[in-house]
Image (tube, rainbow, N blue to C red; front, top):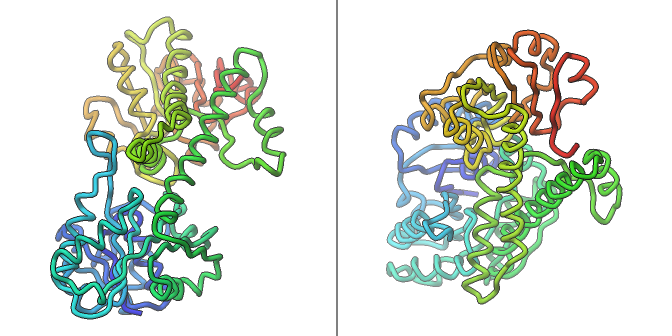
Length: 429
């Protein structure tokens, strides 16, 4: 199958290299020529385990090409995936600017039967919008079908998630187009749900919003545990043992962030408002998430007396481990509050430092956990990288001005931390 993927971010690049690895002829397209040259050299613009090996292998085999021409895709490919960003606009609705621009370009050049696939996370109604834009450019409606095929990958495990999906969702007006798209996923041996366009577009928003709600629920329970003297780890385990609920996404912490949950929760709230429904439940889910980080900062402030004149060390900056993504990372909220109240901040992250440095160039960046701890009044675990799980807590405590540890991800046990000499504070107990 001849396939084009427009956009080489997390979704587009992973989709492209995996489909090429499955034996398809794939053209990945990006308008950024510097990015294209980097990709052609086998260098990924995103940090994702396994991506560069697959990128190099598929290009060497000739199954993957990197280019800049949407016209070439429209004239030579059978399927075109639109996989560009839809970041929140000023009113928190998804910004469809890039999707619309690509649809226009496709419409100008279609000269044979093509399936156009919305892989980007888009609001309900976007499939018909893209179809209308393509037709408005003069394209014969009989030459194209628009299909919704939302992605469910997680940053840090995107390759594995794409190769071993829980399900593949395809929404279409035309059953033949849906079945043709489903055929390219047959090697994955995953369950395929074929539905209408509107349902497929809502499934992605609904899935992420439900998971976000689950996280906010357990974080709200962690606050109850702190007041009651209970342990959120035990409470979560007991709740998760109920097969109707399950244990996934019941890990209390600083709250959710990244590129999907914040955007999709806001997106579903706004989409619902436009349809005439006030999704008050999701608004509270979002409010709990925001308050969770601020509550944690408040506990830090209380333990230190104030942040003024204190040296605070942060272990981790990315919104989650195994990625360099800092979109809606809790580290940024913590840094902002610390600096505003007169603290000195020192931080270390294995891969995300360069992105945080662009926002906060004047805080101190170091190269390991020990250097973070040295001379600090307080150490904060923000991102649960494996190297922090394996850190020598006794050594970290020994080099601090005050051995005070705030565990924002429940990585350490109280017994282990206190045995190492720390005054230990953790979410949910």
